[in-house]
Image (cartoon, rainbow, N blue to C red; front, side, top):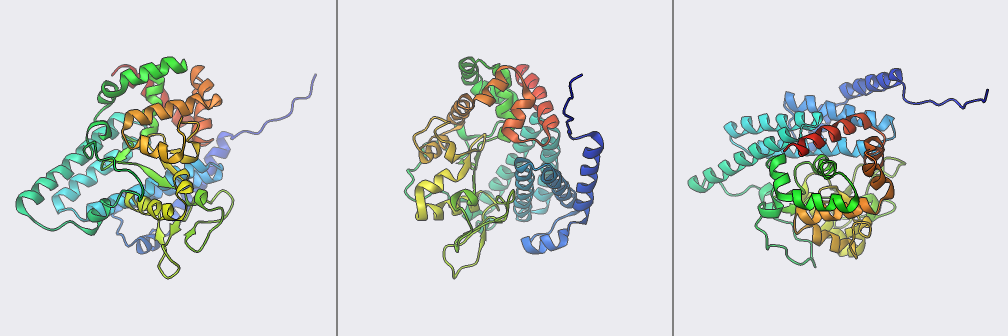
Length: 375
């Protein structure tokens, strides 16, 4: 009999202990201090979700899953941004937006794409209603946050105002059926070129997109400070520790100024990019994740572009270009491509999202493949 080397995977007991430890840490986390630091008030419903995201982060940390850690942090940042927005609403709109926010987060956690899209659509309707009220009553001038959202064009970047903000190829997907109606033919053609089931390819894009590659008509980006500078400097800083370099991203325009958070919202992401461009334009564009699949700019060649800036400009034109770029990225990543061609979803998930929550992501892909197919 040949000796077989023992293997040590994540046993059910180990998973249970990891989850229990993460729950304990999340419950012990000082949310009061965080609220003070963020200058925010977390209502009870928001505290519940913040602790959930903390728990997800601790589980991902225990598994060495940087992708999972970033996702948990991104969801927490998104909730904080939503709370800031809700605080500017009248009471009736606050209650409705709170309901849709919880609806979206619940759907995101369960992988229910249709419910997420419905919640986003309802949220847009609330904002549109507020806009009509403001126009008809001339209630109050735009808030500082609203003005900041208009600061979007990086210097030396050609304007892309040809498509109306939030409409056309930049609009969010109202439903899976709407998404398939808009982009089904493109995805079918790309699936044939990749020798991948177009229903699966459509599901991958839906799961990774979060409903849209745009916010307020602008390309969704995330500025990765630790890619822009190798170590913290006097103007750009991050937590310079192994497996934690993606945390605590801040910048400032001069040493006399206070540090600013990078990942507060899309306005802060673009403000960081704008400043980084003045320091090193080429490096700035390679340091942002962008679009539906949040592909890092440094992967521009794999996505089929001559530079990261070209990729940014192309992705800014609409979802169709992002889908094509995402397809080329998959094509040039042999491991990801072969995983989809052989329908090895677990291998694809590990390769694209990391080792944590493989079961959850695989389940989402399977259910959304059927959903896309039957829409």
